[in-house]
Image 1 (cartoon, one colour):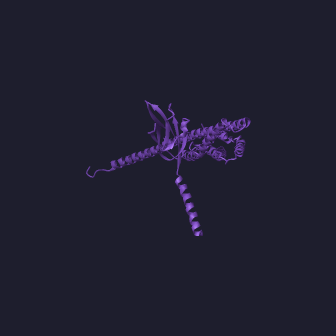
Image 2 (tube, rainbow over the protein chains, first blue to last red):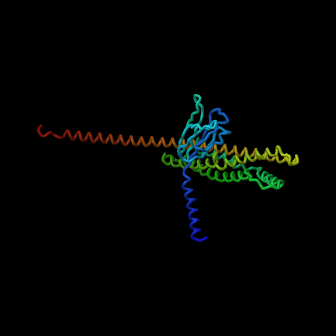
Length: 109
Length: 222
């Protein structure tokens, strides 16, 4: 391989690594609390991330890129949007899902 | 609750994580190797070994972050200026977020912990129904895998406790930070009010001067 070509490849690799660093961006945390007796088939998703921890527990803390996030419930092969909330840099937002008048509601703190 | 006491509480749980030294790990690894030798098959990847390595790394990185959190918390308590405290709290938040990052449910360590637990459960089940080994050997392997499963469960639970502690700590610090921001807003409003009052007083005084001046002006045809 020509030295010039090798240098070019190294420079390109370094560039993509640095670009990767730039793309990393800011993160915050979402704490999801489930506060109702639910059937085992109820699964939760946070902007397409399956919250598997909630299969066995009632609380999960997940790292999320900053911005608006959508909490959804997957029940009987259907997806139900529950609520949207803002994840801010180096902050934690707590979302408690509970029942009210037969329907599910989110309390965002 | 002071910032220092919060960080101390977190450090108690971190000591728990730090103590996840997997006392049984060497035995586990040798048991795993023994099994590989006996079966003479390709060595299966051992997620428990990976989990141990990861928790060792976690221990090191969290210890250094904790020392910084402690330093930052002490610095905040000595600050009296809200602006300086606000900046310091922001830095403290970043440090706690860094620690929470390590133990978050969707982080690498938690994923590896779940995998390690799954592996230990599978191995335990395997030896519960095993017919290949002599009963005494099988009993020994089963006993070892039960112990390893229990220790892995306990290590995963410690991670969970650290996660709860760090999320609680982050919430406390961000709420205090928000409170300081509100205090700053009150201070700013107070300063603004003083400026408006001063301006009002100056306008009144100028107005009085003007009125006095106007009174001294005598109309030409009076």
